[in-house]
Length: 462
Image 1 (cartoon, one colour):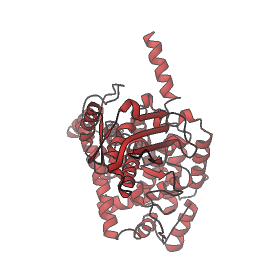
Image 2 (image 1 turned 120 degrees about the horizontal axis):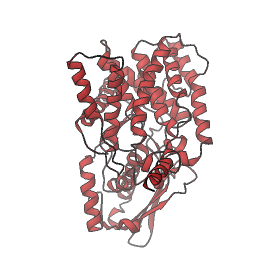
Image 3 (image 1 turned 180 degrees about the horizontal axis):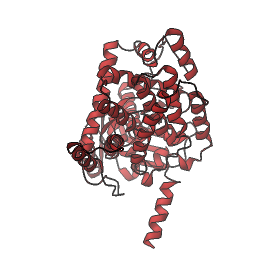
Image 4 (image 1 turned 60 degrees about the vertical axis):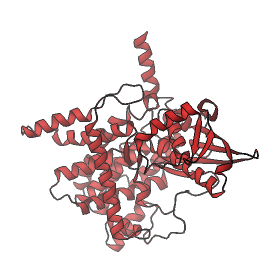
């Protein structure tokens, strides 16, 4: 199935691509289906059934609120995050849901939301929407949120968002195939990706939209650097980016440089993005919300510390990163609920390492090596968010993986591209490890740090 780079980089809202962005999109698509059948005005009630991981961590990830906003006609790319809380408060008080902002339907939160931690067979992230009509019949759809904001209609075999009938000039399903194309055509990975993107958009449109993605990432960093206080959700996690910025700017002003200076800036960029994501702000899936800080942090590092950094390089970085993300999605998964955090942070680390290696002059073989190193050293990473919130360990994990991506690129650039484990081997291992991983370690908050944190708190309280 052809996958565009713009299916990996989506402007949306936090805190989760699979639990917030995907469900909102699915709910809006359900609303669109009601409109197409001219059934919206005949709806007398709506039920929302959340299954598996969407149920287990849905409250902490804002799944319930996201579905409601989708049914109101909102989309992740365009919604103003500031309207969500007032809209939900109004619904809770009035017990009336306005479908598409037009049709008023009775809705009682405690009655019309159904929660089941038992997953449906097809994917751990599932939701079923039921609209009851005046004549007693109903329209029902089941949707699967498969990571990165991608959604699949349960009635379809293919991605509901995918472009059908598209033939790419340089299609590839493996890193080996991608490297063969680069060698045969004497092209970089970024050039191969650009040629493929031209089936959907002109080159100027690709460049403008990718630079727009980078601008949205920068805006998220800037917003995160302005905010102070405690993140929502009850864990009382303090925002750290703003105070770290003050310290780094003071050090620069006083010409105080240490061996940690560049790494501190990388950490800063990642913290700013992921704190903003945790607060439900506007950000870019890269390729998911939970891993959204890694590519902006590494790209920001390159822009700040590399004198040759430029707009054209930003495009090449994102195209190259997109190629690696496509391979991870095609051959394993980018969903934490499916393969654990190795699919989110691991994939993002590989993507960022590849992008940096590309703009630093790496050959296709070195770029593939950088991606492999980035992914290999995240294999087995579990997804066990404390309290079902995308905060602990998620925020710091992005900062650590950002530094790891830079190191991976440096390793690759110091070599000639030959290495023992291929990227294809690493991706296949991620897939197999995800299959073997117990479900409690895959975005359910039923194991790992999520459980041990609770035990530690209880022990202290006792």
